[in-house]
Image (cartoon, rainbow, N blue to C red; front, side, top):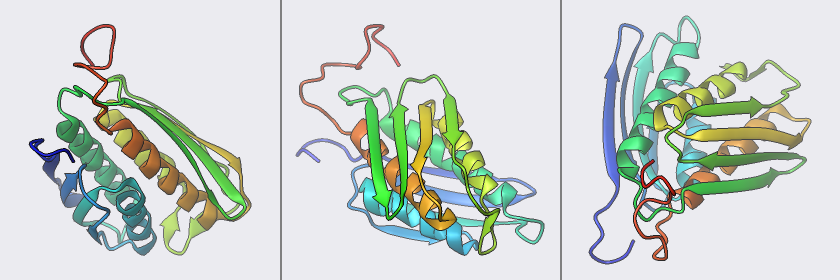
Length: 200
């Protein structure tokens, strides 16, 4: 972060009858994380967002995981998306677009995103199994839809190859992290908001 620039930090809380979540995101971090959701595989994936996106991320979440992990995972996605939107603010000086494809052994997932203010999510993943551990893999799509909807981003998550469910999911989260890092980078050549409309 350039000297004199304020860190882009947001803390969001969400409390419902199903989940209780507190999340802090620092877009100008160094990859540190403290993740506690009670869903081990999901914790692992969120840690990748921090580490490979070079953001600092703290998540404390509890919920009705005795039912299944649906509410918890979706609501964390809602809160993370809201934190991204709050942290980028008016988006002045941002690159705006990000794309990454991080190989995870045989798996390759392309992620491309635009901080456009227009929510859209395409999540084209083909998992050979329904679960990894206790984690329902259909929740990967629900997570990214929630993030995109609440961050106001157009998000495409497209599998190029892969035969191992763990690798496919991990590749998606790592690629999302790198794409988010690219899109939220400040470019000194960008004056104002990166849009011909003058707003995003």
